[in-house]
Image (cartoon, rainbow, N blue to C red; front, side, top):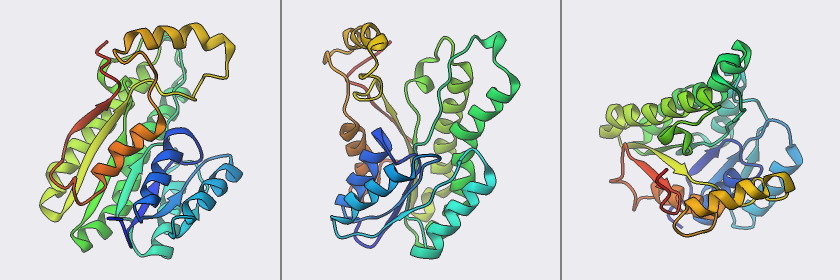
Length: 248
């Protein structure tokens, strides 16, 4: 358990990819700080699962799209554990809408949740990482950051920004023992499979993936676990695509 005694903060960790990442890091010995904006019961359930690995888990609810909430989440983590060694910026929203019709409020909200939160939390957690001479920052970007999406221009802009942030942090703080990387998941199972209206869309997605299946949250978590480990120390400033070979 290479993370023994270290602490990981994972935003949006009550379900799907965030849940899988938190549990994977707990399995490797990390204490985990779990966060969600609405479903506290889901986060508490993840905390109970994490604690089965013999680690401590802390649930801190809050809206990462609000700077004051990010400050409070980070402060709670630092108060309990002393430092955040691994920061995983996973929480995101992905509304759809034609570029010319996106309300200004929606644009600002997407930028806040999908990009600014990563900035606010990194600024809160980096001093502790620098003090220890060891830290990991992982931004979860998605294919919006690689390809651009018709109808999700604000999401694409935000995710490109998160990618750029990781590259910049990698260069600025690499000599202090802190790495920063981006993981870009492809289509993931479980997110829309219960919606019958999405069945045709899901099948079309599968046909674009050489493996002819959707990814699993645990497969994204495996990539994050490597980046968060001692073994992944020389991976810095990179974008890692975990998408089954999808190119377009």
